[in-house]
Amino acid sequence: MKKLILLFALVAFIACGEDKKGEKKDPEAGKTVVKEEEKEVTPAYPAIQKFSQEPMYIHTALHAFDDEISVEEVGVVPAAEKDAYHFVFYFSDDTNFEKLENYYLALMLYPEDVSTIESEKDRKRGLTAKSIKCELVQDGKSVAVVIPDFRILGKKMKSGKAYLYKPGGGILNPGRPKLIVEEFSL
Image (cartoon, rainbow, N blue to C red):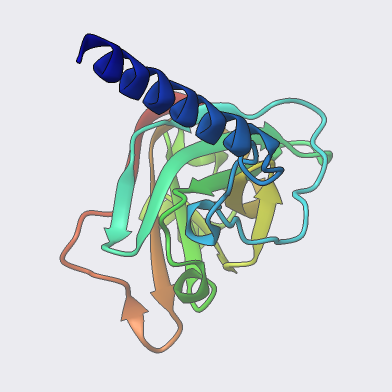
């Protein structure tokens, strides 16, 4: 009886070993299968322009303009023209970029010294502003909008405010706070 049990165990052991050998011979067994849904798709937009230096980040906290559009960082780079700057708004990966492209981005700067504002109208308001249609550019893996050549004579700002709007359609979510950057230098 012991011999019969030993023989049965030996046959089972050998049979299991042959199954494993058969698995190793299968050329598909060692391959890793990547499912399509696991691949991350990053939209391709034109590459961001080359800057003379790296951006100085003046805002690094997430700001939601609405549930589908969020900014992660805002950087500033000196432009080629004297007293002009490029403001780079980096949007989060989960932003609805198709929706963003339908808006304009406005930036208002409030300099400490109001006399550095060029136009009389803006001096009276205490701010200078510029807005552009949101044209998306790619900076590595990040998608950004650049407000180019913002001319401002003053270097110290009390604050800066940014918001999205549609001409004739008003500000996106006027009840939500604008993106605000407090006290920074250019």
